[in-house]
Image (cartoon, rainbow, N blue to C red; front, side):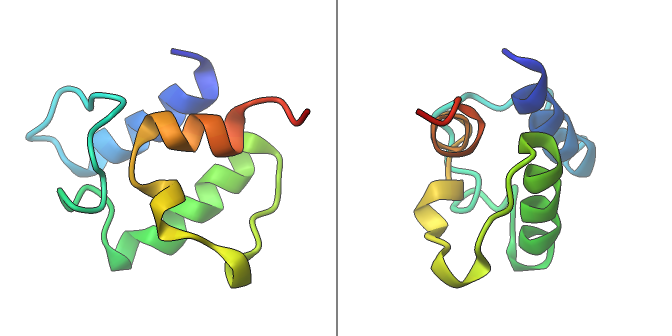
Length: 79
């Protein structure tokens, strides 16, 4: 796992000490690892880690459900 994605994973795990791992295809929202209270903070962290700004007006919550989707959508090189 590359460093930016690991930073996001570590951030989530820090808030859920009962977990020791998060599979890449695990639904973070459905399983309440990211909830409405932490979502904005998570998006801010993702902006810092990725170096890209995220337009809150055009957000699609499905882009934040799984680490594999977050990696593909926000951390992969822009092509």
